[in-house]
Length: 353
Image (cartoon, rainbow, N blue to C red):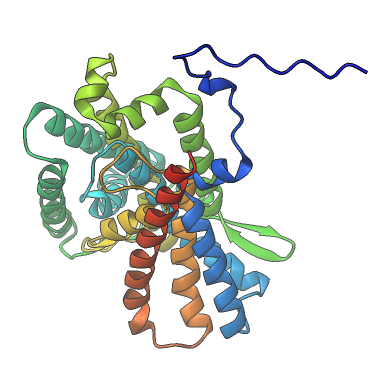
């Protein structure tokens, strides 16, 4: 029986085509940005399953998913923005701005609530465009640009609310036309197997799917990674840098609009001072999920897992009957551990290439 002929070796001075080389599943796994956050999520889940007797109850898990979704709706577009190499410090107060516009426009104009919702969408997206245009047309970094937007929105939220309503909160719009249908879209509850799940979980999952598809299956996804990896290099190969960054800020604004409508239709009224500080939590969730501060690396799934970890910790502490004052401490520990773990995973991935 004749032995098979050996595969031809590459000619001297040449390298074999890397596209023909097989990559092991382990190497592909180590190369995933969300690997560290998934490991962390499993560890947090196991930990609270042990220390909190009620953590594994179906109603408790539904509460955890709700907490994760309210953060994840913003964490996913913020992660895409960070992959593109930028920040948005106005994201937290923009959620409140979106809710205030819907409420006050509907109440003052005695219009159908859906009119206020659509006006809010237009204005919120306009804020995203403003951030993007200011960034691409001027020299200051996104930290300074969006810090300015944060301060302006914070002042406008309080100033306009007191000017129009006379107080720091809006008037109730629960009895206005269109409120019920809008609440069904943004703040309803879905019962599955006798357990109530908030509609925000559906919004969250939809954003994860869309964002992942954009990053991994479209030309826009390539542009986002390219811009985050090096703006000058991306521009040199024809990437529309300005349009990409403006689009990313509009994505954050769209997430803020969804979150703002949920806030309004869950409580009927809105406090003008809400949202301050939440932008840092969105960034923390994205970093825990594997996004690099320097841009060019990360995933939407990782940011979603980061939000899930936040939800498990925030509610797990309650289920374990611990002092909730320690929550920020645990959040800081998770951020440091996730950063170190992500760094180690990236080093291992680079070493196995």
